[in-house]
Structures are given as structure tokens and as C-alpha cells.
Image (tube, rainbow, N blue to C red; front, side):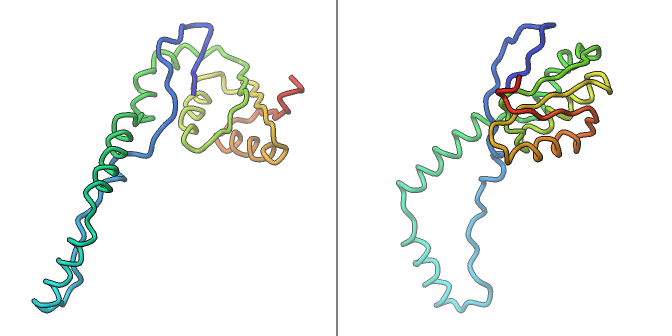
Length: 154
């Protein structure tokens, strides 16, 4: 998502959001309860046989990537509070070619809180199946003055 205003320059491009790295931490596998010593030993041996060093290294590399690229939405909004505070006089918002995915809704919510309460919002869509969803998403954020149009109609 690119937040842009004629009031400020874009110093940093923030692309994409991963799943919180905390969700990737695996809990150690616990043996079933009530195993005899002999069954516990077999279970541990079985677990050991299932271990694949290359696979585990691959998972670690992927988890490291997600941890490094994770962008915490709340922190980004907090870090850009100065930007949002400059939007109080904005009376028109155009959302062009955006999916309005759940991961981006906190930004749109903050935008809606930052611009004039009666600001006119125009969102575009490509797929006719998105028209109603875009309208519902924006009105669900408390935005009252919403128009949803095909991109070609602008």
C-alpha cells in the first residue's frame, strides 16, 4: 500500500504484509500421554526418524524471511501519525485498483478517521463481483459517502 498526499513526499515505500512471525513458531511435539516406557522410546525413535535436516533448514529460512519482512500495521500507522494528522481537510478520497483486503483495512480505517467525516470516497473495481464487496467494506469502516465505479469510468 502506498499512502500518498500532495501534502508530503513519499520517503518510504511499504509493500506487503506477512503473517505475524509469532504465528510461525512451532511448539515442540509432545508425546501422547499415558505411554509406557517402551512405547515412549518407540515414539521418540519415530520422531527422530521423521526429522529431516534440509527440510528444517528450509523452514527456518522461510521463517527468517517472514520475520525480517514483517511489517506491523499498528507500528506503521503510529510511525506515520504526522502524515495522518495532515489529512483533516481532505474532502475527497480515491481508492484506485485496490483489493481492499483485510490486511489493509486498518489503514483505511485510520484514513477514514483522519479525513473530513463527510468526505466523498470513490473506489474502483475491475471485476463486477467486487463492486458490492468494496462498497460493503468501506461502509463497514463507517464511511458514509461511498461510490464504487469501474476503473474505466473515471
